[in-house]
Length: 356
Image (cartoon, rainbow, N blue to C red; front, side):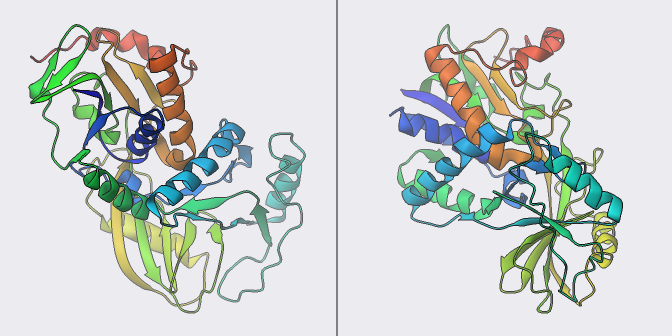
């Protein structure tokens, strides 16, 4: 008997594991590595939407919780995953500079937007209209986090590296049974895989495919994240991540030549130096129609719970959403309406699915 079964070990699954460990709860995780969105994520925590110079939803609250969260994980895993790095926005015209200054006067943005513009002196970067720096930013090395966390759970005998079989899930009145394991609650943190979950596939998680390039460019020499129509993230040793594309129709993890050419074209307008493409990856972001997480209990079966839909900002949202869910399940604290799956209650006629 365990307290919880968790299905999926991306950013959402790890965040909920951390809540359970802090509370001394017993749990087992099922992970088949079928979803790649957390692995290929840029991993940035950035409180500003740089396309329009607007604040990220609940950014202050999320960052306040997220930074100590990742610091604790670093100590637990004895590894470094939180890389303090500036995010810099390339301005394409004087008008964008003016928009930046206007945004910096707004209460939710004033502490994040640096009004001392950076004049570009890097000949490899095409930025004739200067650069704007966002403060209090960084990057979580999500690939490293996931790999180390899997090893940690494996050592604890808390990880089963296998596909979860919904047909084997049995619902009792106030618990669940799965094969030879009984638990009080099962949490589904499956990312885009929730669309194949017979209990939660009614939720409007559309998913958007993103593709990234990894390039090697010895002459680029930037030590900040450069954001324009694409972002460039330094990885060390002259290697950079370039991304990302958005495709709402293709739901596969297969890389495409179309996305590769799109990224190359946008990159050509941003840098002037030579580079070599050394890798090309793809994954499906768990994106919800209203761009808010999917958190809460099934409308009919209270022992079935979902924590999903973190979208493009999972490193920021994950720790907050996991804590809110744990407090809801343990202390009956109401979930905020904007993340509660009850906001999609008009889809509930599809929710009363039972396969056993």
